Length: 273
Image (cartoon, rainbow, N blue to C red; front, side):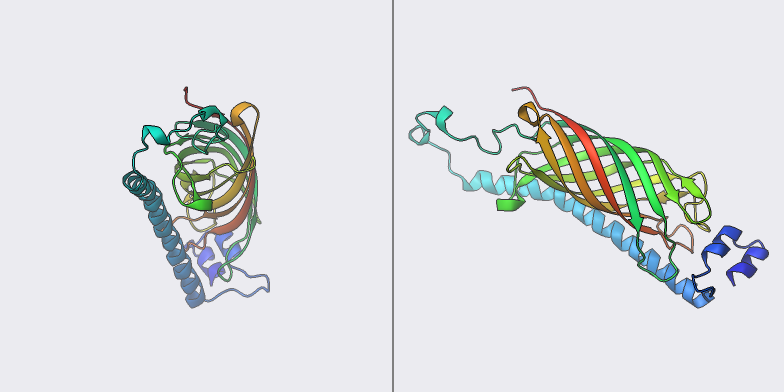
């Protein structure tokens, strides 16, 4: 069916090729419509989940700070330590990775391997490189192992190549909505997770039969390795769920689903004391 539509000019020939499964069977209109509908619903669910996560990241630190400020009584002069220099530094006193007011500058490179969620969905490897700027917005908040700081990040992706079966697509982009939670540094390790939203602009349709502009929501879990004086420099390694789709701008929207592995090198500039 996809081949007949391509012959009539209603569907690009690349899309027709893409609809043919490995076994040589062309999916019916009903199957294609069902898969496209599931993909669209999945994409919209991802965007809603990211929006809720961003809202929680914004509200939770302020709420926690208010509860801790009201619960803790002011320390009297008799409670102060006799020799403050002999006390071990707390996680808010120690400059060892991210802290409130820190600026982060990082360059990174990544490769992504594909996986399928829906039948007949396209598969493509993705290679990318870019840079980012981050600003740590809060002091450390949260209980126990979840204690950390909220960081806002803006990222540019000048290099992004999608290796489709018939030809590569070059799609640079940017991500203005990146919210990162930097866990408190322990044993010279700084774990983090982040939610990420941005867009890419391809020189061709990123998925044949869809659009050249696509969204790229993702979620990552990684760890940074601070080193140097006061943890100024940092290597990082992370695994990321990376999705590209047009969020239902076209009826056919299977999207690309990948697991991305990224390494980066960054510099933290700490606030003056």
